[in-house]
Image 1 (tube, rainbow, N blue to C red):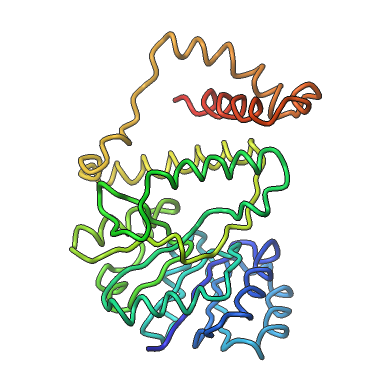
Image 2 (spheres, rainbow, N blue to C red):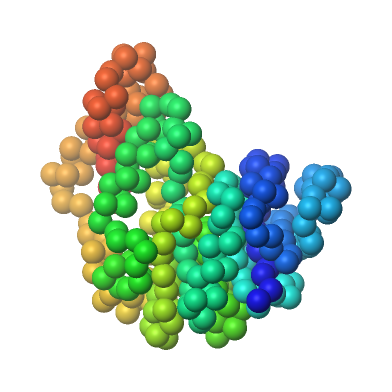
Length: 298
């Protein structure tokens, strides 16, 4: 079994080196590492990556002038020579046994898609909103068995920490490049519909090294909601599998309440009002939730 590790990176100067450093210490090395870099204005930075990491990896650099993770991942596969593909985001900090565990899964269960942990490391939550993010992610974990088979009734999937045989990837025609976001959601649905076994195991540990503030999170949530709407527009049959994702317009009363709360809540929380800074953490969590809710109403 030969392995190709593919990492798309829109802005490699932000986090990529930390991800690569966490891969240098892996118990089992990959046969090749493919970095897919969006745009060309990182030429000098990429030259530095080649110089610093060429002796540590069988390194390939691929350019992608069309932005989007789906297109970047597909380009990485085109350049790959391994029969097992592993995908990571460019801000993942990998535990030393990550690659080993991915390979072991495929030795034991050929023809399977496997995805692992995509959460943040609680040890790194060193500011109030970071602790809120951990608390939120812990609540998501509570209802999900792991390891478990991913189904429409038990759906947990991410491409930020993913492995599968190259033959399965080609069978699914890769990621749908029509979607610039949420493409992994679509990918998993197509796999399940074709009867391909998909496993989620939170013990395949790589941590997102991404710690936004509340404004960043709200913007990201809105982007992802728009992406899901775009997917459902193309595949309305998906809503039959995920009826809870049907977005219903808010009633007049709710819109009035949101209108009255949104501006003061944003001023109080997003602008880091001095009074808010002195609230107990549990009260901050409540206010964070309320602020996110009033900014998410359609």
